[in-house]
Image (cartoon, rainbow, N blue to C red; front, side, top):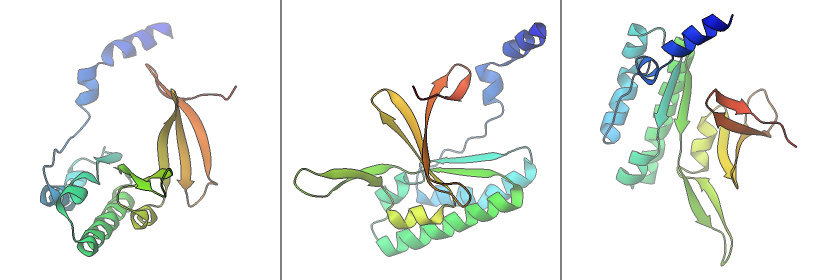
Length: 166
């Protein structure tokens, strides 16, 4: 009942949450690729891990690789390795991509994925998180089993919650 909820709330501290998060800080492309290569060993030793987040998959590639062909091949190889890990270890893999502005004309521009359209094809599911004014939205752009759509959501003290349209 209510006492169980209160006891659980008392155990739910920043320290308790952080104790269950493993973080690898990378400083360049070589380190990023090394982490991905060694992730298989890490996941074998930590079977409780169910989510891998790479934030940002984009940064080092945009800063350090000017050869677009080599960058594309390296990214696709990395994407395939992560898809294999997801399948073998039953983990969700979330890759954060940055966006950049593409100028379409004198007064027209739009936000586009920083790694280009080909990178978007590598993912099986693609969700774009965005703001409209002070409201947050998640737009499902690509999915093997769901139609495209947009959901309004909030981040509250209780977590991420859907918000009904008014």
